[in-house]
Length: 426
Image 1 (cartoon, one colour):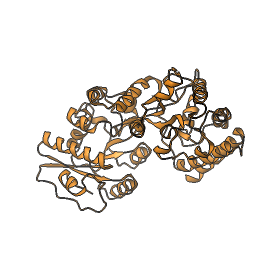
Image 2 (cartoon, helix red, strand yellow):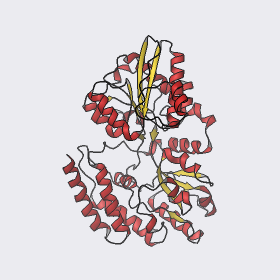
Image 3 (cartoon, rainbow, N blue to C red):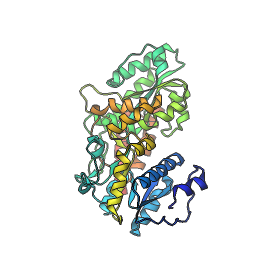
Image 4 (cartoon, rainbow, N blue to C red):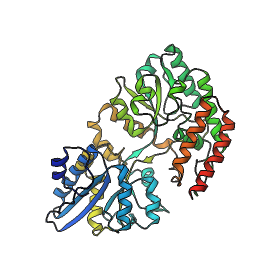
């Protein structure tokens, strides 16, 4: 759907747009472009405000905003792509980037760098995430990474002073045991991450591998997986983890996760969720890295939470690039956008936003700055069938948590199952 900001505000009052609204005629302008994104009420409001600023600053160019929920976004994107009617600028996700590049649906951005698109202040890591075959096809408009969120009051009361940016898995285990002991078991050290594949992937990367290889095959070994499950089994046997019956769902609502409910001192999240976690808690949250292995490879990576891409169907690439450039560099627009789409990849933008950060936003940005030289490269995009592999990991991890299988036995079965899933999906 295409809709102007005025119509958006009048008809929705900030509520998510309903499907099927007719396109509105563009104002009488010399040039026009379209911007399509998956949204939510707050994101839509910010984006329409940015469009208004852009149109004010670029008289003669109108921007038609089109927004829809994530669930329907990719269906509509596929339809528009097939009909060669894509918006000039589309919001893109890492998992679909390679597919749309291979289909020839996106334009390379390299010719515009320094020629309308100023990336001189961009962090290099986030920039590389938008590259396919060495060429830039997607501009990072928000970054993300894994994080262990912790309750700072519980840490302080337990006398924990560990450096949680540089800590090891042994440090983590000792912290969990200390907190459990100091609170008399009322608060356990951590959630049990046995069924959390995203944390296991960090463990595997610390061993020098990725879960999926460049061709989409499973290259993690049974020993990688068994070692991970054994670590959590040992902590569980020590009584330092959340109860089993609350540890088998990898998709718990945020309000039910251990650190939010008060059951534990530490839970795993993505860094763009820190602000949301703090909103549900009274105690102040802190942000810790996934623990490291001594002499191991970096486990975490900077993940683009979303991209902006220039479509093949753009009728006015010059105006579209002008819009893209302002999106990441114009102080008025970046202030409106804030951190809603993730951490901006431009340090100058982060610095400019800093005076208005809430405490939780400051925790999020300080964490992002602290991990910059401690993360590895972005892993290859997930192959078809990856979602089913994640389900299989949860089932196998559940068997280990419930004591129905030993870590090594479950890991060998899981790796065979995972590769079979990928082979079937091809």
